[in-house]
Image (tube, rainbow, N blue to C red):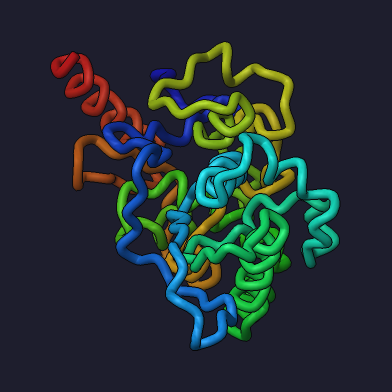
Length: 274
């Protein structure tokens, strides 16, 4: 972090700190939404598959493979023939549209059918009046709103912080500032880490929001309803920066100098704990 306010392209937005970006292993999603697959009532209740908020598509594919008992990579290979009803902006990439929920799985389920239900569920949720109205109000389309929601899902330290994170994103876009989000670099590098190095911020990738202006070309995960709600109706505020100094203590500010102090405190706590 520089000691003086630098040019816009050099301003670092945040380190998440203390909060893991990706949940792996056994899945428990308390806020998951049950999505019926129109299973006949006389059928025994099938096993279920839970997709947590924020999972990347690769994680979803792996979970479907495991739930259906098919070889690893089967679901990803099924994408071209799945005939998913994605928006044109997606270019056939379902990232952002594999809606987080709990899905029943039956013996008739296939990778293509499970993917279709996820995408159809997302389309119904995202094309509702609230999301569409919010997208119009914020001068972004629905696909861009989903992209912003995925950033919020990855960056917010808690559900309570989602609205403020959304406002930071919109404020920086409005002021022509790069977003400078570590989460987009993690996505490009297919990793999860709390440490972003200076060399990472110089990588040649459309997901490098340090070097490139605007939103990344696609969502970076599959956001849940609360993140979408934050993206469509963020609170008013002039915040441009945020950092999670310690668990439960995320600080938002419009001052670069104050952000420097907050980041210094974060680094001090981090180093003392290592």
